[in-house]
Figure (cartoon, rainbow, N blue to C red):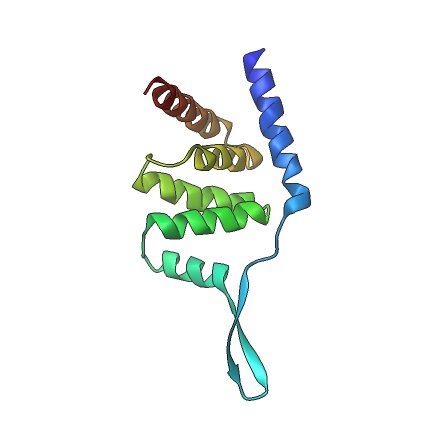
Length: 127
């Protein structure tokens, strides 16, 4: 019963995000002649990460950007990289990582992350 309720709320949260999907962040840089140069920040961050640069902030931004765009495969990839660096994260990242994993069908890993979230919440509530 508990697992059914948890899965229901996870799926409800996942489907509620569909209406809130955002376009990739694009910033206008300096003016070049009569035209502006546009930079897709998400693609730039992704290229930097794929070249080997690792940081918690970078992986948070990539995971959040792809999660907001409902690209769950890439969101799970970058949240996975984030969790390789640290587990000392806000509960939001556990939740979004688990949702991304469920969306791509990696239920075993999603359940593992949800268990980690439960332990984190339990330890923070007892302090």
